[in-house]
Amino acid sequence: MKTQSFDVEAILKEKGLSLPKPPKPSGNYLFLNQVGNIVYVSGITCKFNGEMVYKGKVGIDLSIQEGYEASRITTLNHLSILKDYLKDFNKIEKIVKITGYVNCDPSFAQVPDVINGSSDLLIEIFGEKGKHARCAVGVASLPGNAAVETDMIVLLKDEKEN
Image (cartoon, rainbow, N blue to C red; front, side, top):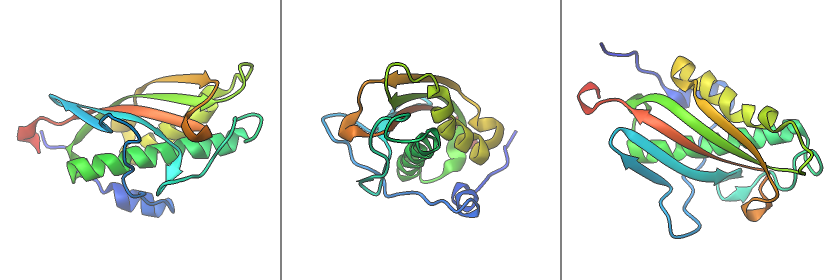
């Protein structure tokens, strides 16, 4: 059974969003690693085209809404990397899982509200395919003093379906 195709970039444009240039790894690792039909996308911070947009601790330096927006930027980076690798978002069967890390004080209890930025965007774009498992964690610091970092696991369609 063929699934309906969709245009992620058109959906983003409708929302006033665009994909950044795919970021480059900042160390000796892969940003994306495919094993069978599973794609693992490494942790990505809230840089947009190489510029850190949200720095500092959410709940102290930044509002929850700013953290939410930072989380959305991490997802745009994931999508940019996936687009660069797959060339076609219609190869995606399902978003399996995201893990979100929020730079915050140990007493900050609204980490899930921040990572909802990623979850909400994925569901807005992919609908049912965007519903995923998730882990949201508060941390003492992130690279470059980023407010948020997320990683992602994606299931691809079988080759014969593409």
